Every structure is written in structure tokens, then in C-alpha cells.
Amino acid sequence: MSTLYHQQNNNIWKTWLLMTVFLILIIILGFLLAMYYGNPNILYTAFIFSLTLNFFSYYFSDTVALSMAGATEIKNRNEHAELWNVVENLSITAGLPKPKLYIIDDPLPNAFATGRNENHSAVAVTSGLLLILNKSELEGVIAHELSHIKNKDILLQTIIVVLAGVIAIVSDLFLRMTFFGGGDREGGKNILIYILLLVAIILAPLAATIIKLAISRRREFLADSSGALLTRYPEGLASALQKISSYTQPLKNAHMATAHLYIVNPLGFSGNSDHKEKSEKEISWLTKLFLTHPPTQDRIQALLKSQG
Image (cartoon, rainbow, N blue to C red):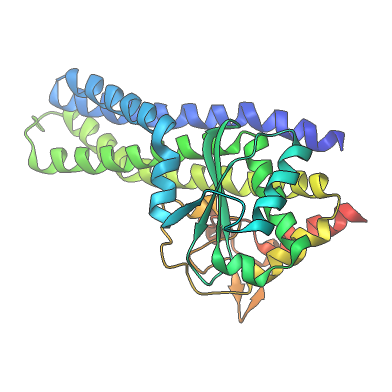
């Protein structure tokens, strides 16, 4: 299991590096527009705007995610005793404070974790998950979500969501300013800056989305491995993933902005074809760039291989 712990540590600096790339993208956009208009205040405004939203996301992103999912807090054990007991027992095993529990009224099975740290975290599950999974499968899913908390994925994933959103907003704003604003387009220098600005505005949101999804896919494998280590029964999570991915309908409150938080894509697409999961080798490199999760069959195979 030393490889797993090494991967946990290794992913931390990689993720912070990718987060730095997001900020650099914003700075580049602001710099090019400031150069085009000859107004450095544009760069300062873009930078301050991004920092302000980051501060907001740190403290309130979990509330936003839970609200978008239509989640309702489970406030006592009597409401969902088995779920409460599973989360409580696995939290003790993982050395974590018990996260807040939420239920999403949806017949399709799914779950996600959110929050900013171990002491401020939450796990949300759909009502369908509780009906469809048996106890060992439920334990596998909860262990997976607790692993996201333990591995500090929830904060990093949340910050990346906000940064990607910021870049999309800033890019759209800058695009409107470029087309409808002033700016002296005469002269070779300004034309070059104009071209660079348009390229940056168009490519920045695309790059931000790809980076966000790449981080999510990598961390799903890690959470699967950590969850299997926590329960000592990878077959439970493997079976749960198989059941959850067999439902191809989207959740009622599924959103692209938060889709990567769920254990399986809630939008109803996970690389399936004719209800049979494609392996990662069968999916084109372009399709893989925009998958919110690794192919479920690859995750199942990795879990079962770890048992062998």
C-alpha cells in the first residue's frame, strides 16, 4: 500500500501546480486586454475579482453545491439509521470527524462529498442509492466519499470549479469588451495583441475545463483505492459502481459545474455504448478529455485487480 500513500502525496503538489495554471490564465487574459486598451486597471480588476471569488468559494462552496443538488440535511440517526451508522463507523475507522449527511430525493443512485476540510465536510446520497445498494455496496460508496475528504480532494475540487467558472466569466466579459468596446486596432502591434487576445479568450475556458476534468478523473482512481483500503472489501465498491453506472438517465438536479463531484457522472454519460461500458483504450483521446470520470469498467477492473 506504499504506492497508494505515495500517490496521495504526489497528487498534492500536482494539483496546486494546476491551480496555479488557472490563475496564470486569468492574469494572461487581463494582461492582454490591459495592453490592448492601454489600461492596467483591467488587469488589477481581473486579479482582484478572481481572488474575491476564491475567498467566497472557500467558505460557501459546499452550501452552493448542496443547494444545486437539491440536498436536504439528515439531522438525526432515526431518519436514515443504516446510512448514519455506516458513515459513523467508517468515519471512526478512517480517523475522521463524522461529516454532515444529506439526502437527495432522486430515484437514481449516486453520491458526492463536499466541504473545505475534515471538520467542515458533508456527504450527500440520493434516495435511490439507499434503495438499490446492499450494505457492503453502500459501505464501499461511503468509503469512497470519505476518502475524498481524507485525501483533501473536496477543497481542491471546489476551488478548481470556481476558478474554471471565473475564467469562463472573465473570458466572456473580455470577449464582449473586445468586440463592443473601444481600443485602437491600428498598427501592427495592436493587431498582434488583438489576435493573441482573441486566441486566449477562446482557448482559456477550454483549457480550464480540460484541467478541471483531468484532476477529477485522476482522483477518482485514488479515492477508489483508498475506499477499498478502508473497507478491506473492494468487491463492495466494484459492485456498487456497476449498479450505479447501469442507470443512463441524468439526475433531476444534475449540473455540468458539479458533475465531477459525484461518484459516477450524474448527467447520464460515462462512456457507455449499447449499455456496455467501453474500456479506456476503446474511447478516443478527444472523448476522454471531456469525461468527468474515468470509464467505470476501468475503475472496477482496478479494484478487483487490487484484491488479487
